[in-house]
Image (cartoon, rainbow, N blue to C red; front, side):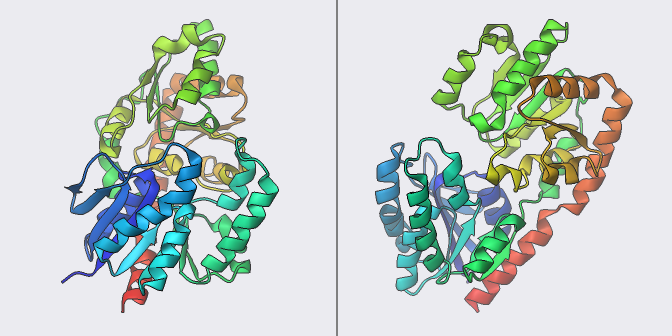
Amino acid sequence: MKKRVCHLSSVHVATDTRIFYRYCKHLTENYAVTLIAVHPKEEINQGIHIIPFRRFKNKLPRVCLTWFLMFFKAIRVGADLYHIHDPELIPCGLLLRLMGKKVVLDIHENVAEDIFDKPWIPAKKVLYSCFHFFEKRAVKRMPVILAEQSYETRYQKMGADFTTVLNYVDLPFFRPFSENVNRTSNRIFYMGILLESRGLQQIAEALFMLKKQGHIIEFDVVGELYSSLEKQLHALPFWNDVSAHIHFHGRLTLEKGYEISRKAAVGMCIIQPMKNSVESYPTKMFEYMAIGLPQVTSHFPLYRSVVEENNVGICVDPSNAHEIATAILSIMQDSARAENMRQCGLQAANKYVWAGEMEKVFTLYNRLLT
């Protein structure tokens, strides 16, 4: 019988790209996989047993109660190994360790540094010190997976047993979306989390500038639009001029979302400067390359080392709507340049493949379970 592994997330939806499509789908080759995450119902999806978990909207009960409720769901699974994806579930992981279970902690982002980028968090320095004290002891009791190389120094200093598994692209999944495409359209595309830090306001302003010049650009946005960002967009002085050209499709599966990308000429990756984002690869960047979609991306050095060196798009100041507008138009109006970016993206994507990263996960699991 296959050994059982269980992935846990109280924050991410069950169909999260890294958790569901990159980890769980590939793990079903060798393991019986259960996923406890935010989801409307219990079901078997592509061989993965999904158990729903209700996400608390209020932050206080989320921090205080989530780990406790997750523990009781997790222990009933009876897995041989548990893979945790949220820092707030570290107490759950420690309790599972006390029960004799194998536990892996997956660090998606530099949570401690991210504290300083969240305006709603009071007493940031105090919270940072408390979290660091707690995390330092936790990572000595369970192996850690890091999503970025930039996190390695921090966890080396804490004495963690870590493996770096980068968010590279699952080529067999994305390649079909490079076929039957219309890369000469007047449409741009984004799929992912919708937060103020993802540059939607700056992109909307760029569309307004282009419209004043006589260029009508349609923008397909796939993701859940939270009410706070929706209010900010509606408050923009030019919103009524561009709202008809911004199409919110809501949260979709990765398959349905990237089906919409077939109509696009440009992929958008306008991430605002925060410590986490500046030092971390955005998954969109590699996904756009894999489907041959030229991109307009923030001009951080890490991003430029991929986008400009591989000639797959244009890097811009993410706070400058004029630069964003100019980059979009330059790709759309130069078909030869756009086609070259498309071909370069398809070729360069072969350097950033998930298969090699997944081998690291299998190696870690085998070490823990044998």
